[in-house]
Amino acid sequence: MSVLILALTAGAVVGLALGALGGGGSVLAVPALMYLLGFTPAAATTASLFIVTATSATALYAHARAGHVRWRAGAAFAAAGVVPAALAGQGAARLPQPVLTAAFAAVAALAAVKMLRPGPEPAPEGARTVRPLKAGGAGAGLGAVTGLLGVGGGFLAVPALVTVLAFEMQAAVGTSLLVITVNSLTSLFTRSGGTTGLDWAVVAPFTGAAILGARDGRRLAEKVSGRGLQRLFAVMLLAVAAFMLADALT
Image (tube, rainbow, N blue to C red):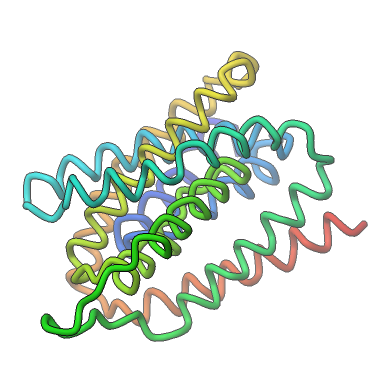
């Protein structure tokens, strides 16, 4: 199978997962780039940031038109992650490749576990309280994960916005795309020297297929059980995590 077909297929799967589940699809981008397309872990995380930024920004536009983005609260949440994302993005290139691979495997496993559990329920209207310090800590942690591993972190952002900022689910999904876009773009800028060495003949079609796949994923989510899709995707992520951890330890 040619590299172009592999890039288009992997991108479509990543986009389909993102569109159908509202997060977690980017966790597949890094292993796909590494094991299917031959990228090093550092190059794969950098390329993933570009893919995540483009796909999230496109999806953000659609959610904004539907009125599902809380711009002020989302901007504040994202601002807490800007510095951690920048610092982590700079530090990622200095980590040994097995350490970076093992760290990514741990995050993939965490994403799978979260998808297997029931989603968080927003608090009742009268019981909603926002804790600024907790919100800032959650935003900073998400930024660090995005910068270090090149993942959007939707599987972390959505629960945080629901439980910490008391968003209803639709607003959490839409606003998480704003947070993901800002964090990914910030980290990408800190790795600007690394993007010059990327194989754009692979990254560009991968990104285009992911953007188109995300649209199809949203349509799929309307026809298929969301919990069923989450379980299927979680099992896939657990397999990826186990494979990457074995690779890092050998």
